[in-house]
Length: 230
Image (tube, rainbow, N blue to C red; front, side, top):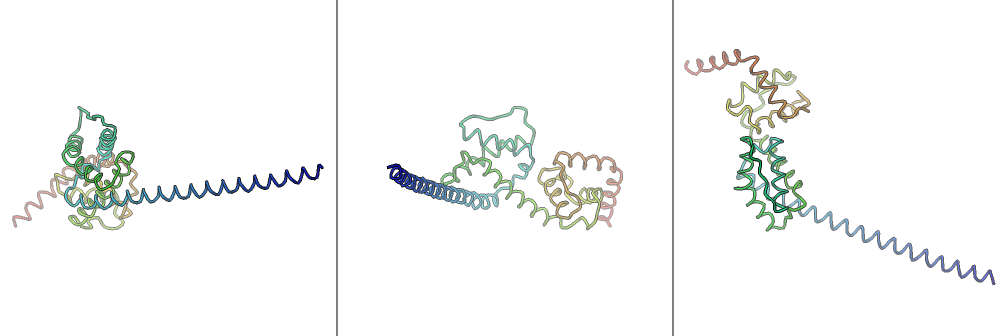
């Protein structure tokens, strides 16, 4: 009797174990399918952003957005758009005002176009901005590298690089966000400095260097003017 009960119990346990294993396998298959769908969705969204941002940035070059404070402000504007709220800071810097104007006059229109093509901005604000800034930074670096060439020799010191940068770039643009971003990346590529500085700190160091060597830079500028006459 007990042997029969034990046998039937073992049979039931075997059935339960099999059913449990089947449920585990079904759930695992469901999770794999869901993960694959999510991966495909993200890839499709990334593809839309990459293609459209690349084309869009052939028409505009908002290098002022490469300033960290400015692109953080832009991210807040994107969040506000998704939430249906209004975002404005009355004590805005010049670059902040440019970012605000660019967002309302340009970027909002571009986002609407992206959304028509299937991109979902809400919940993917950071993905969009990261893709946008990455391509903007690439374009900015390529453009300025072509404009100024390889102006710092190998094995130059940071101070030598500072001097050559100030001598080489357009006077009115040497502290512009795009130029500072280019210079930091350029020094990294050259292996001259592993720049962990913020752009703000590099700007302060450059200004300090220029001020300390103000007379020398004036003499060089005068020499160039006289050479153009002769």
